Length: 352
Ligand code: NAP
Ligand code: G4F
Image 1 (tube, rainbow, N blue to C red):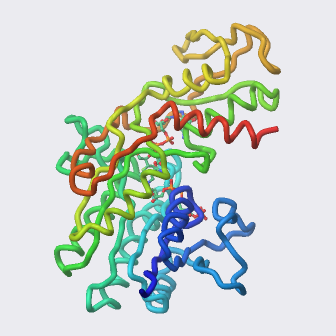
Image 2 (cartoon, rainbow, N blue to C red):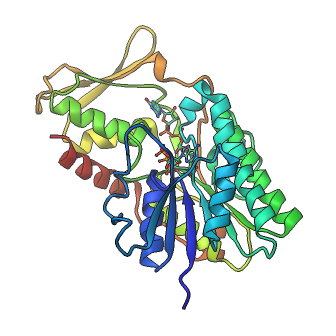
């Protein structure tokens, strides 16, 4: 049987690496699109990459979703069966500092791919997956969020992603394209970027124990997130494109925890005894109650700092995954505690 061909925009990211593994295991030929960077950073996919001169089902190509001619030429040359658009400036906090670049990548980047498909694929054979996000719900009042919930994004990132969500739907309706949105809630893994809260907390606290930094500085501890495992969430991405019709799906665990819950869990797993206190500005900090590693009793190990707060915040995200369970037969198995344990164990091996 002819092997399916997939393009992954954003293959060097967390999800791109797990999705590439999944598709290669399913015998796809995978074209991974990576950006030109001054230092090559393919660490997340090095274990599956073989020398291009050998026989391989993973081919890396340079590309950037801010360049229409590049996107067009790639799709024209590769003639894929499936396209996964995971490429994005994916950090919500950073989107307040880079709003225009975020829109170029996260909004117009998607439009460029959709337009290329519309022009090139007259027979409407290519299936398109858009990496949509729970950030599009913002602080919309009715929870848990499902596919029919109101969208009220509160960041340049969420707003840019909402444009892509609608464009994906519009191209599906206007041009009969197989174009689907996965509205994914937060998902983490040992491969998560180091400046997202889960990984930042784990790396930071391990470094404090090892004496490589004195304290971990964070922003808002009250916000809640519905955290799942990236490996399970990319499986949902693939399932969305295998469904018989294009559609939009919420992918979530259905349970959420606060940032403070996350920190408490990491401290507990690393055997640190501590107490939370407040300073005169009402900022919280955690003080060690035992000597452990390089930590001295009474040392401030975690502290809130103004610079890590965002100009606007999504307070409470939790998803209703019933449609995905029923229609796609997709169900998450890894719980929050297992996810965080796996990430801690991985970073304990990396930080020496
Ligand atoms: P990630 O680790 O930040 O990966 C993003 C990928 O996009 C990287 O490969 C990055 O390349 C690439 N990229 C950035 N700008 C690009 C551009 N202009 N042209 C081409 N590629 C570009 O993000 P992730 O966690 O894997 O998430 C994957 C997608 O799902 C993103 O679209 C994200 O917004 C969305 N999403 C993520 C979550 C989550 O919790 N992880 C939840 C909902 C939705 P570099 O490696 O060169 O930076
Ligand atoms: O880990 P975060 O940066 O993830 P956030 O903002 O929820 O966005 C992630 O999930 C979205 C899906 O809901 C994706 F679309 C998006 O691409 C990304 O993957 O922050 C989580 C929470 C926020 O409330 C933030 O304000 O942690 C809070 N936080 C507190 N201190 C911090 C920090 N976040 C970061 N990154 N760094 C801090 O120091």
